[in-house]
Length: 296
Image (cartoon, rainbow, N blue to C red):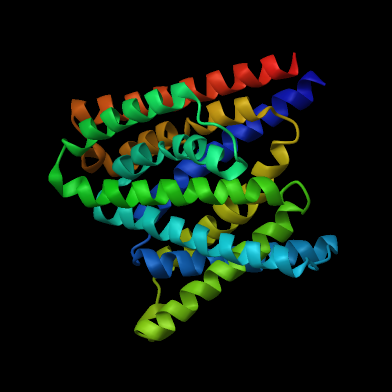
């Protein structure tokens, strides 16, 4: 049993490391955020479809569920577009540090989503997060657009998590992933068709871009999506929440190792990032403690 627990914890850290590496790949891939996400969703959906075929899972879902999956797919598409957009206009460190607000956005949206009262400490934490963002915004005005895009991405990511929190109780992760990734890709396809249309240049990618996109779609998306949902059946949500908070840490360290000085920020930026990260951890701790009290 202990070996199984250790394997699950190591797998969880590996998944979080992969998510941190996603931002680095976004920087390494030379194409813009919109085509990048289109390729990511197309390739990942194709990989998951092969997996579904191998496992012989049924793709049948009720019409109401299908509509929810379609909405979730659009949300995750916009989440990734704004996330990679933040990386393109600023850097990995700015995008990942700001994305740490995602878990906090989720805690604020939960009362509206599930119809419960707002908890007092959540309001206090909200003010502390704003303070952390204030420090980050004062780093360099050149990074302001990146921070704004990352904040939008974090909010969309929180909404996506809340939608999936309901769906995963009934449907397999692979089925959810296939429909969401497919619908997101179709949404981007229609947007491109109505805006500029697909050009030859859209499909003219360098060998390195194809390589990075393949890793992004298979390991960082298809595999990580299915594995992260499965792992939650064996590890408590609180442990998952705390570990996921290491994503910006892993990502920023990786980015600094790969890109060097372009990822180095001043003390005010890191002060703001630490304030946000500690607030998210404290929020998770208090929520877990109240959950244990209710069970006890």
